[in-house]
Image (tube, rainbow, N blue to C red; front, side):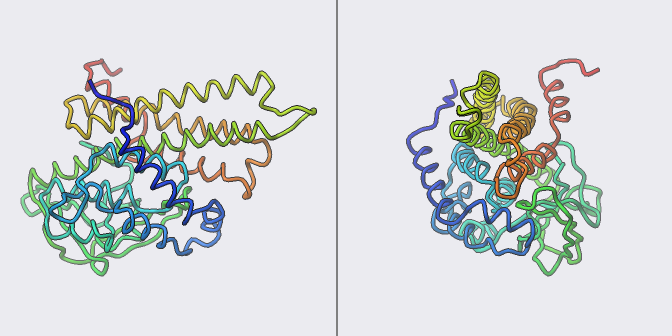
Length: 356
């Protein structure tokens, strides 16, 4: 039976990430990014990548990484999701890294593991496992591209198959795209160079699918972090906000809404952790778990952040309150790596339910 409770090691990792984020990150930074998108956030990533080794979390030890599993990555993403940290952990250390590990790369991974480079998989951010096409010339919108210096592009080879190629920054042209979530900027990527082949044929296709599957499974943990933050922040606010000489959290209507949020959180936690655990153990149920997690957690994060904003009242709509940044991340995540409807369709097929 798969254990969904975190181990002592995983909880220790959580505390380390949380401590590092307290030192390098605050909500004022997120507000500033909306007005000044070029704000330097590299210090935060250096601390997480170099001091905590998160950039190489999924990289084999022989290549300079930690050789951890998806369970540890899920813990990290819960904390990054709660804080909406503008770092490329999901796009580089999970998705791009998984593609390279699955392809058997040994030349590019050491630099990624050391935090010396960041990478992006060049496919539309809505792509999901089994539902993507090789890039002919350009792709958009691509997440994590603007800050990356290594680009993994699945292109069509001369025989009509797939070749996974690596491009340096000077071999691609980048055009920023306006994003609802300024903490995860998007871009159009145009291939302008020759690149270097990492994998071809079936290996290339399977590597991209593995990367997108890992991304979907662990995106659920980021969404879980958003859901948890929404409940915790709202409970704290309703304890302290006084109306009619009473904390508003004492009103029955507020209690019921918070209770519903708690139940939503518990279910999201089960779905997200099961997806991460089955991925870590290469369990045959992993694709069902991923589709289920994305079907549920995507909507759960949006609902939780919407409730948080409403229960914060008018202050929730202001720049001074951090609620709006979580709502924007949750709504953007809802479209990432496949919409909930797409994953529900996948889930129906995986469990042999007829699709009307």
